[in-house]
Image 1: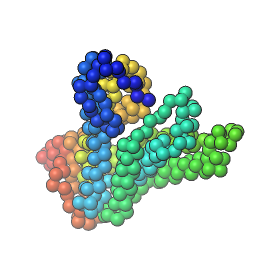
Image 2: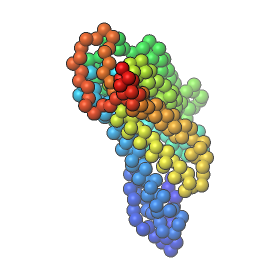
Image 3: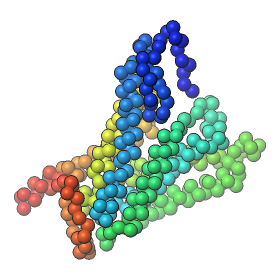
Image 4: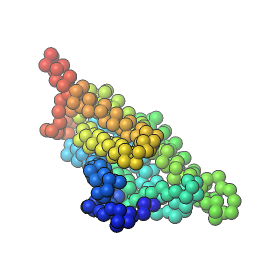
Length: 317
C-alpha cells in the first residue's frame, strides 16, 4: 500500500516520474525523498528491465543466422524454458488468482506479495523466447554428438512430476482451507511456492552445461556473448537499484538479507563473468571441427572474436 500523500503545506511535487512498474511517482523538494536518488533508482529499474528483456533475443538471432545450434547447450535451452515456465505461472498466479493472493495475505500478516503487470509481461515474454530457442534446437543443424544429457533429462522429469503431483493434490482437495472448512495437505499458495523453488534451483545450475560445453570445445562459437552482456547489465543495475532503495529507507537488511535479490543476482553476475572470460580471454568464437561432422554449412559470425589466450597459442604455433 503506498504511503499517504504529504499535505500541500509541507511539500509540493517538483516533477512527476513514471516508475518501471507504471506508477506515477512525485519527486519532492523537502528532502524527504532525494530527487536525484529517486530518479536514479527508477532509471536503474527501467534499464535492468529493458536489458533483461532484450537479452533473450541475441541467441535466437544467432541461431537463425547460422541455421545451426552447434556450440549451444541443449541442456541449457531445456532447463531455461522449464524454469521460465515455472516463473510465468508463478507471476500469473499472484497477478490473476484471488485465491493465491488471499492465501498469501493469510500467511504474511495481511501483507500483499505485489506482482504487477510488467512482472507478468516479462515472465511470459521470457518463456516464449526460451521456447523459441528450444524449437531452434529441434529444427536447425546440430553437431552429431549434441543432445540433452541423461542427468538433465532426469532432473527435468523430476521437476515435472513434482509440479504435476502438487497441482493434482490441489485440484482434488480444493487447495483452499477456507473453502473446504478443514485442513488440506497443500494449498494453491504452496503449489506456487514450489514453482518458485524450482525456478531458483534451475537458476543455480542452468549455466553449468554451457560453461562445460565451451570448455570442452575450447570455443564460444554458437553461444551469444551479447546475451551475457545484456544479462550482466541488467544484473548490475538491478543491484544498484536495490542498494539505492535501501539507502533511502535506511533499511539495509532489505538488501543484505534478501537472498532472492542479492544472492541470486550476484550468482548470475558471477556466471556472466565466467562467460566473458571464456569468450574474450580463454577461447573466443573460434571454428571447431565437431566430432563426426563434416558439415561446414553453418557460417561463422563476422562479429565474433577470438580469445586473447587462443590468439597467443595460435601465434606460437
